[in-house]
Image (cartoon, rainbow, N blue to C red):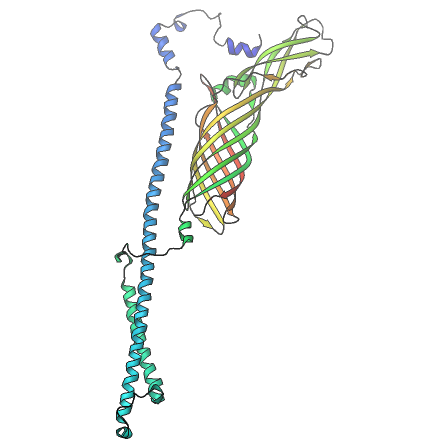
Length: 449
């Protein structure tokens, strides 16, 4: 039995310790000591679900609040537009009335001047009073061009100023719009009020950050346990529903694949007496960030080492290939709207993850002995630990999009997710996953806003 298994399997089995009062407590004390360390998995799960329910209720409240304000704003905008249209009709009608009154006033001025000319003329008695009225061509130029024009201008200015004063005194909220009035709103305006869908395809890189419990790493510290947080690639398909010019809800599906490495050392013995064709076969528990897993391997001897057994301090390096699917959903908000074809968005969401596969391989074994080597010609796969395939996370994101045309955009995204429950858990040992991802996406609009 090697030193690695000795510590794990015989940690508290020292038979040389004499029995006394200090190590033989009564049943009540034993139970009190055990109760402090009973698993709290059910409680943790309840706390997790309370967090999930609280987050969903918060999202629902925010959406209802924003939609309520949006409906009020839309109603106010429509009321103002209708009032403007009614005001335009009123101004148009007043202009028509003013034009007709100006024509009547001009005719009155012409007739008045004609009569004055006729009665002031000393030769008018000789004229036939049954004759027709004097035409405009017989009016002196000074009267027909100067006086009439001056009076017309004064009349127009007076009417215009009166109309302006009336318009300025109007209050839009006091204007009653009758249902019988039919406003011809262009279809382009109606189309802009429609909500729209945005479909995006994104590809990029992802970085897995392991959060391993202190108890796990401290118990493995004598074996120099180590692991790497590594990069991988990811792709996603998202569908956004724009409920407001600056607010959208989103959902999608995401796939990611990464490779990580871990390792530790362990004491083994090469036995010459147990050789088979100058080889020794071993079965060893290997420590990974995802728990302990059993691995089988073989050492071969290529030189004479005598009759005695050889003690080895072996370094193990394992490779882990991980595949993960997730369904993210949440809300996005553009605090500054669209400026010069650019739009900055903030997102808050929740992710449901499924760990579809993890494969473990022995990447390398270093024996630190010239005559004994790891024989890597056979299968290097070893068993995978028991994992929680279904795990959840909270997600925050930042995006910057550029409008290429009315229907196409490109967007640069950054996302951070915080794992809520562990992918591996065994008593006090657990591993949670945080992720950072960067992606570039192409967005297609499926409607106009």
